Image 1: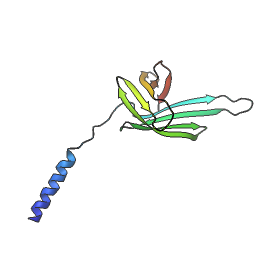
Image 2: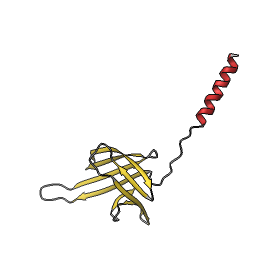
Image 3: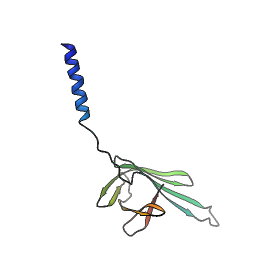
Image 4: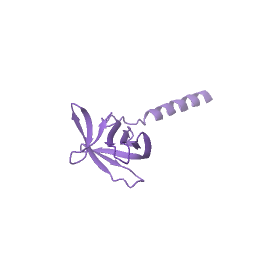
Amino acid sequence: MKKVFSLLAIIAIILASNCSRIPENDNPVIGIWSDIEVAPASTTAKSQTVRKEWIFNDAYLGRYHRKINGSITFKTDFKWSYENDKYIISYPGTDMEDQVLSMKSSEEGNTLADAIGNVIAVRE
């Protein structure tokens, strides 16, 4: 009797685990996006490279980094959503404003642009 009960318990566990599948997110924004700005050298300072990097994952979360000359100066997590061909990025716990971006495709590659068309990031 114990063997039959054990077999039924195993079958119940297998059936219950197969019922809860997480839907696959294959949104084209998933991946690494970046923006690089180079401030020219002046008489008092060397040139400075500022790199902003967004890493989007399939759980509608991500990580934002800001690097100056290769050193991380700021990093935070963000949430993102996709509605009406727009990506809404929010940075909870920071004073950064939400961003509403759209993806543009061209011969050079994919870019994320703001509402007035300024390129915010380029896919790596």
